[in-house]
Amino acid sequence: MNEHESAYDRSHDDHNHGHGGSSTSSRKLAAVSVINLLGFLAELAGGLLFGSVALLSDAFHMLFDALAYVMAFAAAHIADNYGDSDRWSYGLHRLEPFAAFLNGLLLLPMVGFILWESYQRFLEPVAIGTGPTLAIATGGLLVNIGSVYVLQGGEMSLNERGAFYHLLGDAGGSVAVIISTVIIEVTRLQIIDPIVAGLIAVVITWSAGKVLRGSSAIFLHRTPFEQHEVRAILRKVDGVTAVDDLHAWQICSQITVATVHLETDVETMAEAETVTRSVHEELAHHGVDHATVELCPGYGDRSTHLNNHAH
Image 1 (spheres, one colour):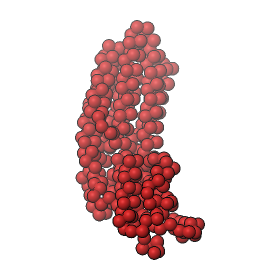
Image 2 (cartoon, rainbow, N blue to C red):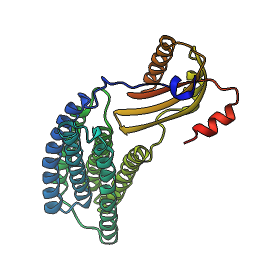
Image 3 (cartoon, rainbow, N blue to C red):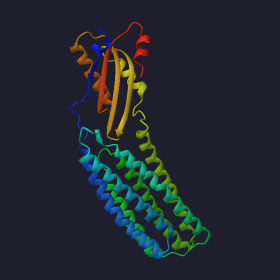
Image 4 (cartoon, helix red, strand yellow):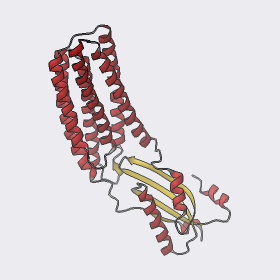
């Protein structure tokens, strides 16, 4: 029996690439977008009226976050509603990491702006209206808390995680503005304002790094699990004698795909079916949503077989 006759391939034909959780993700991101746009307008007006560069920094942080949420919502909405056709094998879910990557990039120019403004204010401190600034910063914190409440619960998608990190940065920024405003009111040290703005820039940079690393890992097809561990587990499946080839990657944060080529000592299709089912179950335990499993008989001369089978 040659390799082609014994090869057995099975895929999850009933796997739904639409992922119902995406609709919930879209609604959450839409709600957070609206909340943060309103918060941005309030903080922008307050920063301009009362002279706080820290409040302005937090406002622009909130603006870019809101734009990021809009992009994430658009990507999730398009993937949910316009990707179900034979032309797109896995729908348009690849838009999710693409939008997340752009979101991370959007944060970087904002960091430069904040640092420049902070430097200018550090050289020439400007008096700020502490009372109104404190009130607006508190409102911004409430916006962040409300947004976190909307997002929390269940497993978050990549874009939801990106939004969550943004919100943590926003909340930290609002708290920093509140504390710095109180300190300025007590000590009259106006230089505290640009220092806090610089700290907010550091938090923003951390947020951008998290999002960029996560989305880049998907684009560059990083294996989403420890491959040597999965290989060891598959080798223990009854009927499997060797794992010749194993590849796994993510379409988006919610869809993981894998292909595996195994040597086996089974002799009937029923046994092959049992082995394949077991392999699918093991891969599913490691987060694989869609797998293609190929079985072939063991070869006496493995080096010859592997050279012929090399990709």
